[in-house]
Length: 283
Image 1 (cartoon, helix red, strand yellow):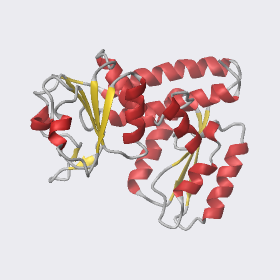
Image 2 (cartoon, helix red, strand yellow):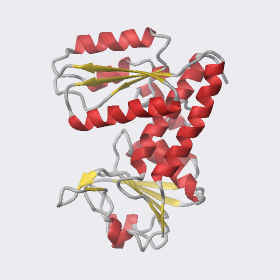
Image 3 (cartoon, helix red, strand yellow):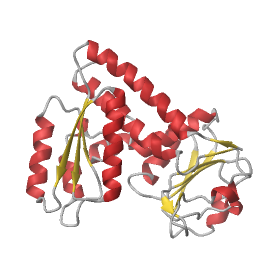
Image 4 (cartoon, helix red, strand yellow):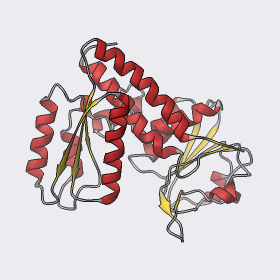
């Protein structure tokens, strides 16, 4: 069994992005990312700080809009409209979840698809479906990088994605399908779950249930990717996979923390770089 080191793979992606960013700067273009955060959600604060740090590492211009909890939909929409028109900003990211009184769908649909570096806009989601896209959602794109880093051939393999969210599960299945895996998606209503997961050569768990995946759900020699971010009975950070139980059964596995997590932010940097190139007609 080998542990897939998300920190190392993430670092390599960021170094590549920084090198490309330096080349863009030589042409007078600095990639710019605007992050909007509404309210005081502590987890969101941490994510936003990490994104700011990554922008600094890659040499991007970044600006944070920290709006008060009581911000109205109208005010939020107006800010998005302003950023859509701002040439210095290539990527716009609105940190979710938003406070209850705000409609995240309305905000996502308002972001210009070419600045939607989260790839949540319906235009970008549709492009991923047909396989002709500018950006990929950051977490599934990060998962693909981790699988590629193992050297395991995806084509022809059976892949099972546990979870059907719009942010991870569905796009994840599409990306595996684009690389010729035979893909099955499982969810809370799936029958014979164990039978399905234990036939997977590549298993991606994204269900938000701490240590749910046990050894008897995993095929001998499978590649196991754990997208979960949960807390165990002692309040310790863990994933959807019971790492200790599963580790001796698989060929590769991602740890939590230090697996998929670092990749998400690196892929956001990659998307922002892509957006800057497209908006400045640079190949």
